[in-house]
Structure formats: C-alpha cells, structure tokens
Length: 113
Length: 117
Image (cartoon, rainbow over the protein chains, first blue to last red):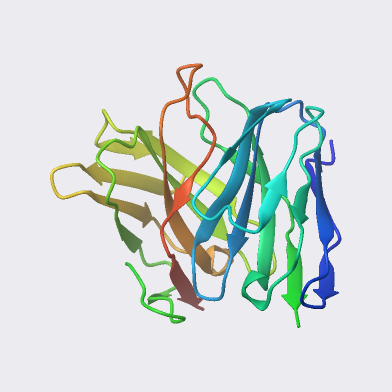
C-alpha cells in the first residue's frame, strides 16, 4: 500500500491563478480530510468527506472547493489563489469504527506570489 | 503548551529522561483526544488516543493522561530518545455515525520536543 499520496509536493502560483491539489489513498478509507498548516501553527481543517459524494466544511473553508466522486480521491481546488493561501497542505484519511488514527500524506507546500 | 504567533513552545530534555508535553483543550463535547508527532518535512503521525470516558491510557513508552475537570491533556514519554525529537500536537475529535471518531480533527498549536544526546 502506498498510503496517502499527495501531488504536487511543491507549487508556486501567481495571485488569481487556479489549481487543484491531488490526494489519493489506497487503503479503502471512507473518511478523508484536508488541512492547512501555517508556520508555528497546528493544522486547521479545511474540508472533509465521510464518503463518496459527501463533503462538508471545516474550520477554514473559504477559498477552497472539494468533491469526492470516488472513495480513493479527494482533490482540493483553489479557484483564485491569494497570498493568504500560502501554506503547507496535508491530506489525511481515516478508517471509521472507533479509530482515531488518521494517515497523512507528505504535504504540498504552496506559495502564492 | 499553547503558543502565540510563530513561536512554538519548546521542551528540551536529556536523552534517557522522561518528557511531559501538555495541552489545554477547549471543547468539552469532544469524545476523543489524540496525540500526533510531526517530524520535519513530514505529515503528522498518530501516537496514541484516549476516549473522553477514560483518564489514562498507556502505550509503548507513552502514556496519555486526561483531566476533564480542568480540560487538560498530557503526553508522557518514557526514556526519551533522539528519535523522539519532533513537534507534538494534541487533537480532538467527536464521535461519528459509526460510533467511532468522525474522522476530522481539531489540532492544538503544538510543542517542539528537543532531545539532547
């Protein structure tokens, strides 16, 4: 199993550009989440999904869209990048049923100039 | 330990000593409390969790203590090793429809553990 795979690892965007951060997991986990991590901060929840076709907002959803068409994939879209979205983005998946162990990807470091 | 701004609280310990990392949480409705370890350049890694109806849970070299009266969580690491150097985050979660965690986590700001050889 590859676990949780995020692409790209690094990205530089200009203000106003759009892009999609990819996240895929091969563990057949139903729950998937996106977090952002700013310097010296903990992770903040952007959006999450409890299964294919179901998504919901987290703490900081503004400026981001998600969709969940398959169990494996949970892409995060930035429609019009802003410098405030410069951050490291982590995708995670979790198996439900009494388990709190989230498996995180390696992260995508995004810089918006 | 909670941080303000860009500076994480840092705990520096000697190799072989025990470490205690603290966390204050705010949501009394949380059902699970979890500790994660994050090494530089990597995603967080699960260490141990505890349900809200427990006050202590032990793992391999780690113990988590929960004091709901004062909303305090701690992680104790026995015989700290250089490989334990990382940032440690506490996180909270609520119960989902399956009876377990719903899968989304609310993280604290983290404590940096530095182990001196």
